[in-house]
Amino acid sequence: MAESAAQSPAPSRVVRSVTVLGAGSWGTTFAKILADAGRDVTMWARRPEVAHEITHEHVNSGYLPGITLPGNLRATSDAAEALEGADAVVLAVPSQSLRSNLERWRDLLPADTILVSLAKGVELGTLKRMSEVIGEVAGVPETSVVVVAGPNLAKEIAQGQPAAGVFACGDHERAVAVQEAAFTGYFRPYTNTDVVGSELGGACKNVIALSCGMAAGLGFGANTVATLITRGLAETGRLGVKLGADPMTFAGLAGVGDMVATCASPLSRNRTFGERIGKGETIEQAQQAVGGQVAEGVMSCRSIRDLAHRCGVDMPITDAMYRVCHEGRDPATVGAELLGRQQKPERM
Ligand SMILES: NC(=O)C1=CN([C@@H]2O[C@H](COP(=O)(O)OP(=O)(O)OC[C@H]3O[C@@H](n4cnc5c(N)ncnc54)[C@H](O)[C@@H]3O)[C@@H](O)[C@H]2O)C=CC1
Ligand SMILES: O=C(CO)COP(=O)(O)O
Image 1 (cartoon, rainbow, N blue to C red):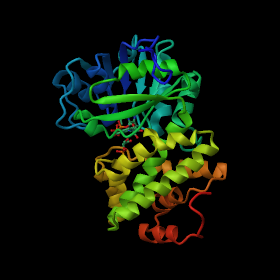
Image 2: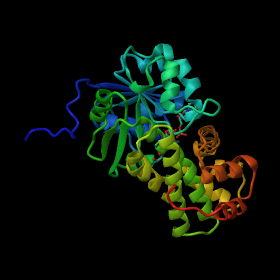
Image 3: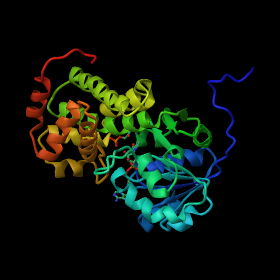
């Protein structure tokens, strides 16, 4: 059968060895996917004891308790050793620390390696998307960065539960090469050329997941959550379109897919954080509830709000999350204000 134009062609670039920089929940899970797909994978962990545990005991007990990692997955806390000869380098640290980490790694990156971003956020201050930060720091075109997005709660994928992701890149050949490298029986990656939409989908849904968690914590049910998901998608789409995204991306894995998974799952750190706040806990208590891991939406509600203001885009739910997380406002009062805004048509 002739190959249809819609199918991904066989990659002309082949990714054999991959370095994953960051040994948190998604970094370790993504490394497991690549190792299960037969790649030669080395992880970098900040703490030597974490690297030792991954290599010798095949577990990362702090981030993925109960998960056995493949025997061909090894880790080191020496970034130079981890990066040597990598065909692709996966950046798996939180978005607000990506710049400072990458500045340390920049001179160690192999020439023409494929840079892959797992981070879902918008940088505070610069208001840049992660591929823009990576392009700037690494001195490569931002269009060469492969962005991973979609409904990918780490724990479920680490357990081998079926899921799909989307690998977005302006250079289709690079996206296809990473797609091929991460294709396993349980994880199905698609490609997309809309990097702006894919990155904004991933960053904005964390903020909306905070709001869904708060609604649940306040005792509200499925209608409230569905309303927040749908209107959250509407404000994400408004920002995305203003910044050049394809609106159809928000109907895909990076949009509605990730929005539904994160807003509905008790595994989501953002939703959990929001739920604790809704139940009356402080920011510090909510932070403890996510076990020291990063709930990206807490910082992203500020950067995305600033980006929306700069673009003249109305993002009322994001604005509400900013008021709760950064101005100490009461979630019930902010929720009532959100509901009582000037009435308007659904689509405008
Ligand atoms: N966990 C998940 O299910 C998913 C996470 N993501 C995104 O992937 C990115 C990484 O997430 P996770 O691996 O889950 O994060 P995590 O909080 O589980 O781990 C972060 C890792 O980065 C390292 N790190 C280096 N510098 C750091 C710093 N300054 N502050 C904090 N940690 C630092 C930590 O040691 C740790 O190994 C985030 O942007 C997240 O939104 C995306 C999809 C799924
Ligand atoms: O991005 C994620 C799922 O796609 C993970 O969400 P949390 O960071 O809220 O756990």
